[in-house]
Image (cartoon, rainbow, N blue to C red):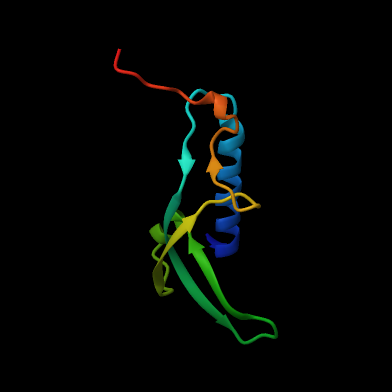
Length: 103
């Protein structure tokens, strides 16, 4: 099964957004700084009008099936940020922070 690269990145954004929503009110927050993503992709070129070059992310099923298409590894280093350029936190209330002491 091949998945469009744009769809894979959209799913990643959705999962990060969902993680932030689910962590709201939790005592520990995680700051998402960098997301390192390695993907196995196949590249196709269509001669049809508007076709162009397309990148397809290969699922584990497609890799196991032994496809004859040439695959490439694409490594992306993404910085997560909010729509206004702010930091992404898994939890939105600064009062939720846990302060650890050596007592």
